[in-house]
Image: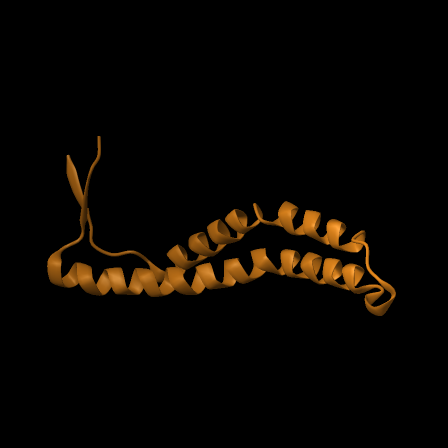
Length: 100
């Protein structure tokens, strides 16, 4: 049996998209934590004493913010994408899927 997806609820799709993007961004978190640790223990000369620790701390903060930023952007892009799909589906028809 073939069914056609005529409309996608933008808010619901945006919520799913935001959570999915945030979860995928968590993959980057261990790499940023590793870079933070490496930066904290990087040798430095007297002129730049503590620069490695500062850079390491910044990498950790950035790493913690990435899932939040990805989640917000995923929500926004998901809402826009669903709205555009709904507009185009009205003109050319929706996506057809086969279900049992």
